[in-house]
Structure formats: C-alpha cells, structure tokens
Image: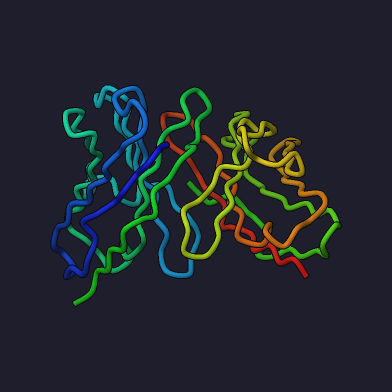
Length: 119
Length: 110
C-alpha cells in the first residue's frame, strides 16, 4: 500500500536551514507529482509546494517562495524540502502528499514531521 | 492568495445530515471544478473524501457528497456517525500549479 514517511524535522533557530525528506513506497514514485503541505500548531492546513513527476516543474507558495525549494530523487524514491532562512511562522507539522493525477489535489499523505523555529 | 472561507464549526446528532460550506472567489472555486475535501482527525494525516467537486474516492462512504454553486462549494454528510467527527478542509486549484485551502471546519457529532 502507499506509504509516505517524513523525516528531518526538529528545533532550529531563526535564519537557519533544515532539509526535510519523504520516503515513498508502495507505488511508482516516478509517475507521480508530489506536494508538501504544512499545519501550524492549532491551525489549518496550508499548501507549500508541488513538484511534477519529472522534477522539472516546480511551484512554491508565495509565503515560502525564495526560501524553500522542493526537489526529488527518483533513485531513492524520496521527496525533499530544503528550507532556508527559517522564520518563527514556519513552525508547523510538514506533510508530504501524493498528487492525485489529473484531479488537482492529493490523495495520500504521510504522518508529518514537526519543525519548530525558535531561538 | 486568500484562504477559502469555511465556518469554524458545525454540529449534528447521529443519524442527521449536515452541510458545510467553503467560499472562494471567481479565481478559484468559481473558475475550476477542482474542489476537494479532506478529513483530518487529531494528530493524523488528512484523508481525501471528495475530489473534482462531487466525486468520491473508492472506499469513502456514499454518505459523503459534494457540490458547488458559483464561488461556494459544499460538503454534505448524511446519516452522521461518531467516526465522522473531526476537521474538514476544502481545497481549490487556483491555476499555474497553485492551490488554496480553507481554514477548516470542526465537525462535532453530539
């Protein structure tokens, strides 16, 4: 079955960097676009970024554009989110999610990894 | 891009039906038939319940249905069950590979 397992979260100081990973299994990773979605403590979900199945097409939410970069490694079936210049308002649980091809949403998500930006 | 507007909470008794709304603009819900609804239980991953406004993924109960009129989408749950309790988020595609989410509605089964 589809499995998405995020890792790499932790406590980081403002202005520093962190890289999240999402290990995918149970499906043909190379055939699917992938998303990152986040949820601040006690708040709603927020779309962060998407990458196409080939890795060529990427898009980031305005709130993270220029600071975060989504990427993927087909050889490792892994999705990444490089987060630079972190701010306190980036504190959230970060979920990776599989794009539901042709339907402009996502159909499976991982359990998430918590990122806390604090001095 | 402003978030979609959802009521903070709705409630209903077991067996009843409830409807929750999701209001956007002519640039998102009004323009695209790519509205989806996701259920989230505390501490859990979101689960897709409705896609393309009104379609259910396999395995999702037929008690869940979706619709859209103008800039507003709706999720209806009939025959409420205790397990339906949780947070519900609407999502709309907004073009150019971007998405906007609603703030979420907390469903309480009384």
